[in-house]
Image (cartoon, rainbow, N blue to C red; front, side):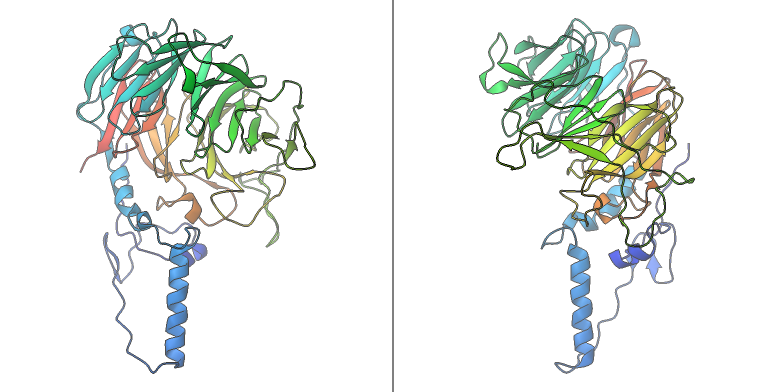
Length: 489
């Protein structure tokens, strides 16, 4: 296990990053001190108003301010100058001395981890019908929900700091209240097969679930009782694997075991899509060069990540309808001619990108890929008007524990990705400086950078999760052990 610690990161400007998109963070120049960045330049001497020197200095100051606020609005984001501290903390992550240990004979594999929004509770979804709750700071066991379901517990989602939902292979969803864990708030029945993930629309207070029956169902939590709450089928597609909502709930992304990625734009969860009102279309893949990146093009030519088709189930007066469906076949490095299964799907916390884990149909390769939205939060020039996503980063995975789904995650600030990697985890970044996706120059598809590898399990890691409030990370494995990681100096 190697440890990669930063030494003397210099504070390069955005202009320097354009010239050197991946500078060596360990490089120290003559004007730098380790960990402190460049020495401040001497103050220029005063010049007469209107002199060429003053005009040049004013232009330079304007350029500097513009580079500091680019893609961030009028005001400078203070977090922009604090990322070195967080990078140093994440690089020093190690298993906590008091890691949480679970007995595999009692609980079985750990399928999902979820922190409460305030970071005060860590919930664990277990294979053997149980949900466990821990204090992530003290590693103290709080409660075990025995027989929370009648089959495997697959996913947990907090609605707020006290209410959370669980879903299971028993085809049901359960609502729980942290203030009264002796019994469920209610059980929700509507799926015909295993329920695999839960989302929550904070705008409409609709709970959204998806399962292997191919259905996406909405539940009106505004009107729940002990007997359940009103629900309706929102969408259906074959081979459904995962469903996610963007942070602003303006889009829904659905991944399938047949390699499709579906995007519902301008989302309106109150209007269901009728089954059969759209047809599934296979999109063409963009050819890849021999080095795994996108094919080279002349300067100024658009970079198309993949082709897609937009399908509009309803049109009224020629206006763009709500719930417009876009069907994509994301390009996968090394998978030019073979199909793939998208097993895990996550979204950037600022809604800038989609993160997927996929495996080949032969199940002999696994990849983690990042696809940037070409519309929305990252205001870059449009690359392709016909495609919403572009492959920007990827990395090959260990392909250990075939047949099991590995859930990866973004850090709360979106700078890092934690990916299950065999019997441990890897922290991955867009560049060696752990910069934000918006700050990484728009270059051809590149590899994710490995920042840290940590091996602390005796079995295959299946799920990971960052704390939303603390510099902490949790992982769970097939044998039922949960490990906590925090900085150690």
